[in-house]
Length: 79
Image (cartoon, rainbow, N blue to C red; front, top):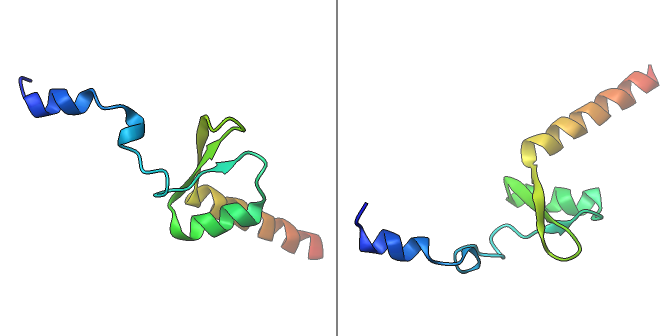
């Protein structure tokens, strides 16, 4: 592709494109409450290490599945 605009965009550092306030990150030692609060307004929560290096994401669907499992486990314990 000989598109000069595309070639220019491909040279941009990622830090100039990503908006850090768009999906705020959490660290690996954050409480489940903090993750839940972020997941209310975000489809996913980025996770970084203590140095701010990206580790991965926690998807909202993963959180919902986890909470459903916890609920089922608690109900089974009551019976």
